[in-house]
Image 1 (cartoon, rainbow over the protein chains, first blue to last red):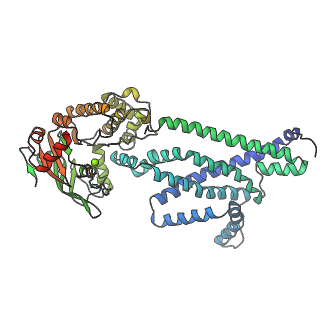
Image 2 (cartoon, chains in turn cyan, brown):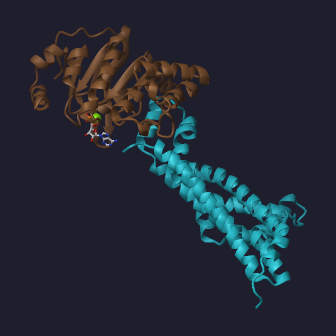
Image 3 (cartoon, protein in one colour):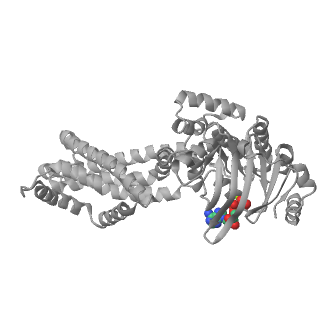
Amino acid sequence: MNSLDFSIVVQAWPYLWLGLVFSLALTAAAFLIGMILGTLFALVQHFEVPVAGRLVRAYIALIRSIPLILVLFWFFFLVPIVLGHLSGTGRPVPIGANWTAFITFGLFEAAYYSEIIRVGLRAVNRGQFEACQALALSTFHTYRCVILPQVLRVASPIILSQTIILFQDTSLVYVLSLTDLLGAASKLAQLNGRLVEMYVVVALVYLGISSAASQWVASLRKRYAMAGTRR
Amino acid sequence: MLQQTAVNVPSRSSAIVAVEKLVKRFGQFTALNDVNLTVAAGEKIVLCGPSGSGKSTLIRCINHIERHDSGRIVVTGVELTDRMTDINSVRREVGMVFQSFNLFPHLSIVENCMLAPIKVRGLSRKEARERAMGVLRRVRIHDQADKYPGQLSGGQQQRVAIARALCMQPKVMLFDEPTSALDPEMVKEVLDTMMGLARDGMTMICVTHEMGFAREVADRVVFMDRGTIVEEADPETFFRAPRTERAKGFLQQIIH
Ligand SMILES: Nc1ncnc2c1ncn2[C@@H]1O[C@H](COP(=O)(O)OP(=O)(O)O)[C@@H](O)[C@H]1O
Ligand SMILES: [Mg+2]
């Protein structure tokens, strides 16, 4: 094998950049959808809403027991058929690889974020709820202004770990013929034969982004720790 | 069993809090059994009794943090039912201070005081901040307004908790052993704050074993045991000449 030649990376950068942007966009979208839905799912279970609570629990158990790649497949192939039936024509209605990726990742992550938030809700001191009651705050304001902000702060390290896993999992979109950072690198590597260089660079990018995110959350936590109670 | 001494029990009309034949059960256990208590505007009540006698349960029923099983609770003319509109209109007029402060750790001191006035009373942020700063000044803690609860001492936190309740401009204040969780050197600053409130004419129901405070402030001392009110009297009479053996026994324990 030849000696390493990283100049190839400079040439490849524009294509890698596109892949990275896709990875980040998918992560951001899945994070948003996942956190909003996940919070709703957690609240539905927390309030033990009659039917919805059971449905949500079943959904989470199902999603957490199957690999993401399988969910992507199903969503990509089955949903168009279902939509076709619903529309009455019977012909599959394609929803496209991009939509599939964004929706599936969001729905998938919601199950994981929901579990994190559900556990966090149980950890909030009962006195916090009583203080809200004593101040006549509505249930909505109690959760919106007091309980959830505390849950999110306390759970932020776990939420971050899950989001880093999500960021790495975006590489699975290759099954939909989409190209993320890792996909871009491996395609280029096959073309130019510079496997080692391409994968080293990609690893460094993953490392850089993950540690930057960790540090950011750590600094948030430090600010919160200062703002936390003494005992 | 109830021993009434010469205390002028306020008439129903001037009552801010009226509790009649209150019963509260936890499963099989009866925590409150036929409790009657009337509190007039401006009156200061000290509620005492052995641990487990139902003092906390009684004041928690008054703002419906605990739901009572039977009897009537009327606060500022509104009867507490299970309807959320009644519950909230009562809670708006009743401030409560807990043993463990229960400040919101993620909000600064002034934000702790602004939240409910904005969300419940509909004040603007500016109005709420002005009101909060005024009340914080009254409890002499306005110089800490932008700190977080975790940065304050226990005594300071409890004064903030009092301020937070006052910002809703309540007609009654309930205190549940507000100094029990404090280091001894911080008890006085909280009691002083409460005495200030009393001087300003606030109606107060205080669960406390601080007998100095009771002597100075209370119009009536109400002694509870095993879920009932056993004795009520003005503090002088109660401390000097308790009528019941149970109250005597209790006072002996407190003094030692
Ligand atoms: N949530 C609850 N569930 C079951 N029992 C309770 C509950 N809260 C209070 N009790 C019981 O009710 C009795 C009165 O409690 P409490 O009002 O807290 O007493 P006090 O404040 O006078 O010490 C105690 O025996 C206590 O164990
Ligand atoms: Mg108690």
